[in-house]
Amino acid sequence: PPATKAKLNALEALRGKRVRVFGWVHRLRVQKDIIFVVLRDGKGFLQCVLSGVVAQTYAALTLTLESSIELTGTLTALPEGKTAPGISGKPEPNGHELIVDWWKCIGAAPGGEEAFTNRLNEKSDPSILSDLRHLVLRGETSSSVIKLRSQLLAAFRDTLTGVNHGCMEVTPPCLVQTQVEGGSTLFELTYYGQKAFLTQSSQLYLETCLSSLGDVFCVQESFRAENSHTRRHLSEYTHLEAELAFITFDDLMTHIEAVICETVDRILANPLSRSLLYHLNPTFTPPTRPFLRLSYVSAISWLNEHNILHPLEDPLTGSPILDPETGKVKMVKHKVGDDIAEAAERQMTDIIGRPVFLFGFPKELKAFYMKRMEEVGEGGEVFTESCDLLMPGVGEIVGGSMRISDSEELLAAYKREGIDPGPYYWFTDQRKYGTCEHGGYGLGVERFLAWLANRYTVRECCLYPRWPGRATP
Ligand code: 4AD
Ligand code: MG
Image (cartoon, rainbow, N blue to C red; front, side, top):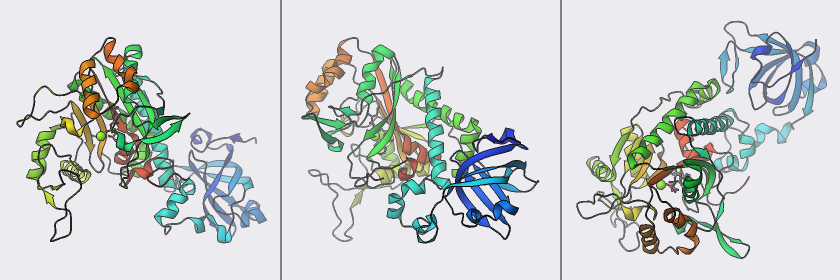
């Protein structure tokens, strides 16, 4: 009978039929007169059984892992109690297998010294794994992370464009001539004889869209020249940013919370993403609303109460001061005005154990465009309508704020920060021609995924990660 060509995630309806499938040899077990192949096509996995004459050809005997092959056979339901690799490669009951009656090798992978498992195996060291990322991606875990990422981006888009939020997606440029988050982390390049940068954030462009498109969002690469070799820093990352008009600071935090919870709900409601998620993170529990909201000032007290210390810094240079006795950085209590370092932030989030909004950061710690809070601190400190969303295991995954809406105030902010207002004329115009109270946020997609899928580092959460010194493959 004729065979139906099918992808491995679409076989359910073809049980009992003859099918034709294509893919790569993911696992291989050769017995005396029978060969078991787990076929992988990127969409799913299928156990295939070659026996009798089909298992005895020369090609069958020399078959290698990672060869690409074509197979035809009958798709047979597994006997009860037997398992076969499911959508994420993990064994699942109630599956099916292919009883092969014809097959062909399309691209044989080498055996011997150059065999796949000699280039890459459990003992390969991290720098080899980075160089061979293109091969690592064939693995069940790495490919599951990337598949979940794809589902996650689709879920975010559905949430943001859905009836509850009604945001419109736009695509701002990556080549820009303005900074957003400080000059020190800009990648600079020469652009037809002029100075330009790779974008750090699309925020300023999103702000300009409010008056033409209403609430907007984008999913765009952002670039940060930070010499940070940490679990959560990349030089290039995918930045999901949104900007909302005619809102209050409270509306902004409620919106962020809703977008995150609704997106997680979508992931759990879809059988594919649900299965990928629990394969990667078996103990995942969705967050509950409302998230804890902790002001920056209360966070400083909280850290001191929990004896989480701050590195003592030289007031002039900002560099850490060493304790002459121990030779280690001297640690002291936090005080209002201190930046909460990554380590302290992570410890705090892990102890709290659920998502927490830190809000109201001092003006000096935050970007030039942020709106100031009306109330000032006990020592006259000025705080901003800013918030960071922290997740257990990762720390900051979202940074957001209300924006200065008054053009005079914005001009003063440029001046204070030593920013030449010239290149920002278009951003300033947004305040000049019909300003409005507005705010927005940026979410690091890799950081969100690291939290969702419980990955150790953001480097596992994108296709080809870039960090200081690495732009290959
Ligand atoms: O806190 P950030 O710097 O905020 C902004 O860029 C705002 N302009 C966003 C906005 O309001 N539209 O960055 C936002 C988020 C962070 O919370 C973090 O999740 C992620 O971007 N992020 C990084 N992710 C990976 N590697 C890096 N080097 C990152 N820097 C920021
Ligand atoms: Mg931030």
